[in-house]
Amino acid sequence: MRLRSALLSAAFLMGLAGCATPPPATDREALQEFRANNDPLEPFNRAMFQVNDAIDTVALRPAAVVYRTVVPPPLRTGIRNALSNLRAPTVLANDILQAQPERAFRTAARFVINSTLGLGGLIDVAEWQFGMPGHTEDFGQTLAVWGLGEGPYLFLPVIGPSNPRDLAGLAVDAVASPWNWIGQGEVVEALRWARFGLTILDTREEVLDVLDEVRRTSLDPYTTIRSGYRQRRQTEIANRTGAEMPVPSTGFGSVGQTPSDPNPR
Image (cartoon, rainbow, N blue to C red):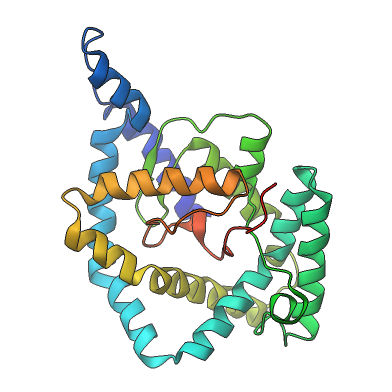
């Protein structure tokens, strides 16, 4: 939480000095593209993208490669299922806040089934045996459903691509998560750190091939990831199935999320 607060403070202070200059009003095509990109802080964001890329190159990608190499696929799948199951209370709360009773019921049912029959969430029995696929919800999506605009695009090291609305949602979800309030002591603290570490490894490993392909083929990975992130968020907010799109290498905004719901709202 201290790291997030420091990054957010730096973003607002540095962002004021890093605003991109809009094209002249006479250049309508360029002005339309500028507004569509929604990236008035582009100079600052690109600088932060480079910082994040350096962190990823030195630490995160190598760790994800080792994780993929050492941990067999069935175990990685189990870990991903368990991490997703731990996010169920957050998803349930946002289902309720969005007035989606059917989705809330399914989330609650999945949590009970997978926590018991699924051995603590390691096996997704709810989808495998009962045909109940998971979906993702967070407070950033809830704010969007309530009508709050996303604000300008923002890229922060470690957190990845985001915007003010989703950053606020991320903070609310982090504070409201019951796993941050239940239990105390060294063992509980160690489990929280273990979950944190596994979440980062799982998230980075999940997009290992996608990001490698973006870096290999894209003339401008920054704009590719920016576009992919915004499209993905629009897809998630609308609760519809969309094509796989690039996601941040370590973005907390996507940590522990389950696949998008195949059933439209």
